[in-house]
Length: 151
Image (cartoon, rainbow, N blue to C red; front, side, top):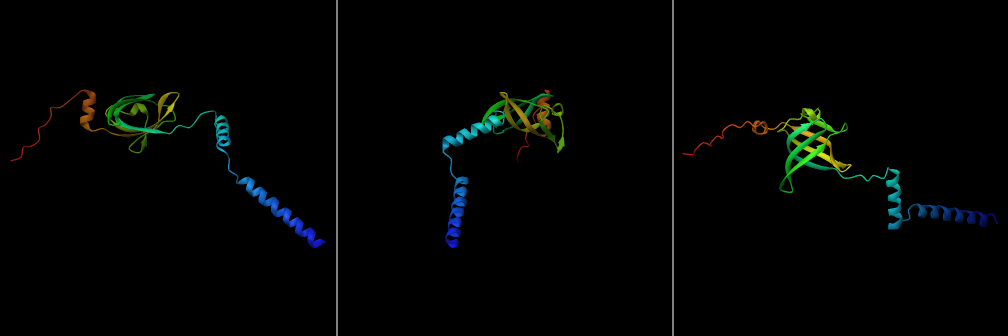
């Protein structure tokens, strides 16, 4: 009798553990998964996280709260105006600088996201433009030099 009772308790225990394990690993239907994602979005303030984008080009103008950059996008000339906020990280030569320190003609690589419908810079990596770019931006141009002739 004791043996039968211990076998019965063991079977109930194993069945309970196996059922619990199956319940933990059960798959959800796409509808339930979508409902769970909606709940998570609402819990996170209703905002979906957008993927960061990047742009490269030359600074046309810079202010404390914005940068205007000209470059190429998909092989065509483009111009972007990026909002700059206090969380924007701007570096030049490995040192932190402000947007006002960026000069026209500087080459930049900008990583940005759309915030409130505006492209907002997250990080800006600045490398000083060449003297020709800087001169073009300031309006001063030297006459073009002719290449040396071959004999």
